[in-house]
Length: 165
Image (cartoon, rainbow, N blue to C red; front, side):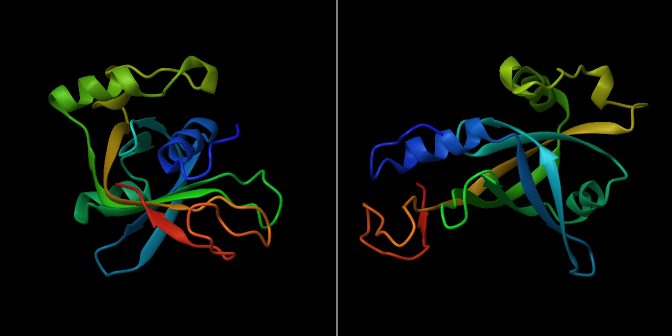
C-alpha cells in the first residue's frame, strides 16, 4: 500500500479497495443464522461492490431472502497490529436489465487485478452464475496507525473505526 497523508480517509478507503481482491460478505439466512463468504470483488467508487456467485451458494440464497449484508475488506498481508480494514453495511441483489449491463462493464475491475471478464451469457440462465451488487449505506474504516501509536486524525492509541461519509 502507498503512503496516504494522515487524515485522508477517502484516500485510505480507495487504497484498500484497489489493493485487495477479496471481501468477506456477511449474510443471514431466513432463520437468522449468520453466514460469511470470501468473494472476489470489484468496487465502483466507495459504495458499490460487485461479485459473481452461483445461484445455489448459501450467501446467494440468503440474499434472495434477506438483502441486508455486511462487508469487510482487509489487508491480510500486513504485520500484526498494523491492521487496515474497511467495514460496510448495505443491501445486495442479483443484477438484471440495465443494472446487469452496467455491472458487466465494471466487473471484474481493472485488468491488472488478474480476473477474467464475464459476459451476459456467463451470468444469466441457463448458467448457474449471477452477477451481484451490494450498495453500502454505512461505511467505516479502521483508522490507520502504527503499533502503539496514536492515529494522526483522532490521537487515539487503540484500534477504532471512523465513519466514511
